[in-house]
Length: 324
Image (cartoon, rainbow, N blue to C red):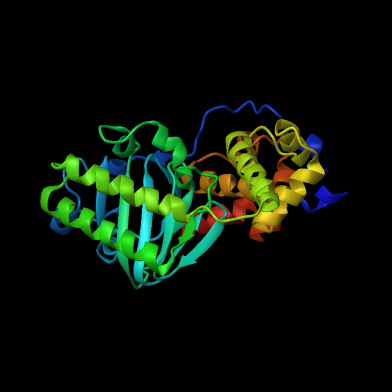
């Protein structure tokens, strides 16, 4: 059977479709809480982050990284982040994948997506963090939040820019940084239009040119990821996701593989393991409770799934966290 490459697909009876543990125990930090937990206090940070930094800030990435207490374990944020490099490289784990980017490349971390990073990378560029109202208020409109697909958790977080677009994006970042450094958010009539223009350039660059067949596969893959992130605690079978999309499991498998190189079953497994790692880092729940939180009745099956991808058990993984 094609779905047998999914560890999850072989154990329909090992999980509950409706877990009894409903409370979301994975912490999601707002900008203020993240600053308190993961940044060094001091005058330099105060100069970089202006009043209302919880709504929006932009800084040179090479300055900000030195203000952060590394490593930052798997966590979520209430706002979106954009990292754009003009030199060097940066490494970050977003979702279940670890990405390395270089000059003229971006990483997007949408609100609610799991991310982590550990390296003091040698690079130059810009880091921007913002809330939705920077897009939807005054000169923007709520519809833009739907139009900017790059801000959804199921989008591809890496964007590679061609030379011309990289030039436009660099100019927009420079303009935003200049005004933010001088005036903070006191000139929204300047900041917001430039910022929306920046997002528009990045959003356009994030959309690949495809033929009709690949385009249909891309749409199905996006819909699958959207369903996956929304229902990972209650739906673990490829066939159930296919049913929600009104297509056959075989059609879903072929579409997702041609776009991502991975089967839907592997996407399901890796998303479960990612959620488990965040809970192991952030909560005091036992392994049995974490298994229940993720919809499993059988802790031993959950442990085997975790070990398949992390090459260690959840208990040993947690002990390594405690030692570090």
